[in-house]
Length: 119
Image 1 (spheres, one colour):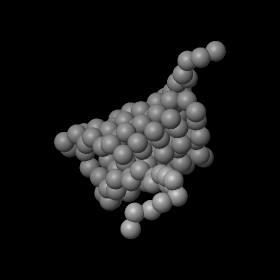
Image 2 (cartoon, rainbow, N blue to C red; image 1 turned 60 degrees about the vertical axis):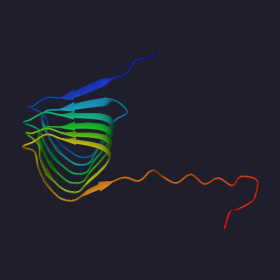
Image 3 (cartoon, rainbow, N blue to C red; image 1 turned 180 degrees about the vertical axis):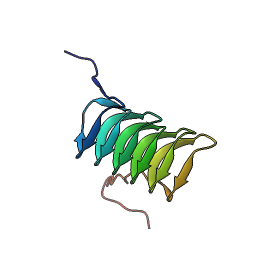
């Protein structure tokens, strides 16, 4: 039973509360709460009020809250109000972001090789 799942919240859907999904999400409606998912695609008419956490995100609507994503694309129609944390970032000309950008540093990997250290 392999294969990925994909969930769509249509333009006529409004949700109050957090969303946590192992699926890819496409949101055209309004969400008042935090979103955590694998991949997020946000439509132009969509509004999200809350934090967004995703491995990949493609944002085209309004987001009021922080965004944390590995691969982040902010389209020209996007209006972001909040801090943005990313690994890879693309912003189309015309997008607006009110907040700070911070590149996420890879987590350091501790390794002790042979018990010796160079000073």
